[in-house]
Image (cartoon, rainbow, N blue to C red):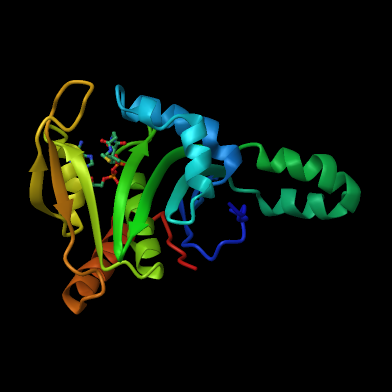
Length: 229
Ligand SMILES: CC(C)(COP(=O)(O)OP(=O)(O)OC[C@H]1O[C@@H](n2cnc3c(N)ncnc32)[C@H](O)[C@@H]1OP(=O)(O)O)[C@@H](O)C(=O)NCCC(=O)NCCS
């Protein structure tokens, strides 16, 4: 299969700031992100992550029907530091100084989905412990829905553990409704999965509600800003 660049894809990017000096960017996942994503996966989905091994992630990134985005924590570079950087010779910036500025990019969450005939099926959304309830999971869902729209999806669907009320709350907030149940879906413990689905995401009512939710998300986190490519 032809390898695609993960960097240049015209995907959705949301950029926001949660606290002074720290910013978070949601961007397409790259190969280098796999170890951190796999770690969050293990943490967020104990018992299930074995199905998404590091090699499975690599296969997914090579699969044009599968898309992953990650939320990264970075450090805001103060203007003084930016100006100082300009004085450093370009070759030093390239090989050392610039690299130093990029080392603080930690991944704090991820989301993935696969596309099949107009349907975007969410594989997983996970946020690192200690970074939950900050709006990052919601930001990842917003990015996922926007990316699904760009890829001409009509609906977004998923399976979620029957007991996972936190995730179900998040999905309900974005118009997902329960459309079915898969009995004993999770082989690790035999728990049922709830199947949830949106209405047509291109419809006016969905769009009106989605745009409002996006605005609300930005307002609830006034220090955050969203920039969608
Ligand atoms: C589900 C998950 C991704 C949510 O991420 P998060 O960053 O903590 O969520 P946010 O802060 O963006 O919250 C967004 C919405 O999620 C719901 N939510 C989040 N935490 C909640 C909690 N503790 N109780 C109830 N609802 C909650 C709410 O609807 C919330 O909206 P609100 O702030 O208007 O109430 C995160 O809890 C997680 O990684 N869980 C483990 C993995 C998992 O279960 N993934 C989903 C199955 S695919």
